[in-house]
Image (tube, rainbow, N blue to C red):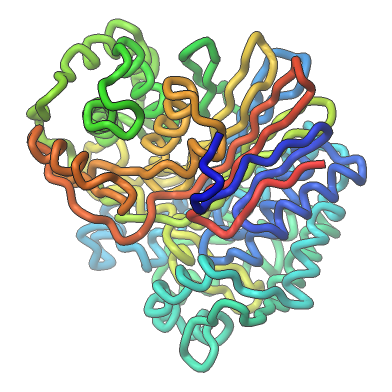
Length: 533
């Protein structure tokens, strides 16, 4: 039980349905869908669409989607890869001819075809109960009538103001007198509302074909992009159901989406850590954090070497998840000293990225784990004024290095950082979970899981706990990491540095079938909450 004298909040407990998202209005929208007869998947889509309006720096219909859906009583987890592909004309040679020596975050060349809308439609058609038009109504209302900017959203908006000033349409519609709106300001996006109405009326085809797609292509080509209307038309059929990957950990079956997503790195880290005894000093002790850092360094080294689009590149998934490989890596982790790693391939991913993760459980016990993203804050910063669509920059995850598995190529999907998680217990949904934050996500997921399963934290405490992350030879520490622990890690050969922006933000819901209860948590690093009824 938490210290009620200290800042914080308790986990939310309910019996019928629950939603945990990064904005209160989105959690409420999900609950209202459940009460109207929708299932967990319906509620998640409604919440994600609304977040694309009221948390616009993080997500939107100009971005991508991954989803894990666990229908109760089936023992199955359904995985959706809603990541978009590069244009058909996107080759390393063409981009170098355009003057690029590396991918640029604010370039039209980093805009892959958005996958979210087509993924929502495909998920809804296969497993939903309510029509897509019904699910988009909260987002349409917010875009038309306006919404109030929350504190964390305002903070991120201000940080991205320079990017928005670099695009005339973005500056016109996303800045107020040249500045980011402050917390409490009211914003609206009427063009986006019209686009959402068109999608509700005519389906995803309205986004990928016809006037809206043509407008987005014109905007991108005016910025030097190689996109064609045929690329958007193909995007209507781009998202696909895929076979999830999994690993057993502490009595739970942990599921992730396969590559081109990086959920495999979370499973690899769990495999490396599973052989260790309880560490001295507990959850916030230097020994535990050192082990986790080392597992992350090994996992992310392999990410940079192997993870790419498996349709175009062979990704050795079976080998990377094998006990023999992971236990051998784990044995290389030594308490008390940092290991020497061969230098990894230089990652081109940003220091931090913006994404929304949310989860919903309905009265029947169906569980949805869904993540939607523009990648960096406001994605590419390129707004198509006619459609009101802010376009993501997921293609920034590509490389221009010939022969690298993640080198850009026509119709190829980039290595993707967004990873929803799902835990099953005894063949039933137990916990949808996820932690946002760009490439931090595998680290965040494994911290969350081990906080709960190894150290007995409840779901809210596990999300609240301080975080750190190894990047570019240094350990980025949140302010909550104790000073003596930082000193001890430095003594082991790590180089800890303070990190101004908190690592990620997460949600999770635990299903207790014996008690008939749902227990949810939402990360204090964002503006959101868990709600149940």
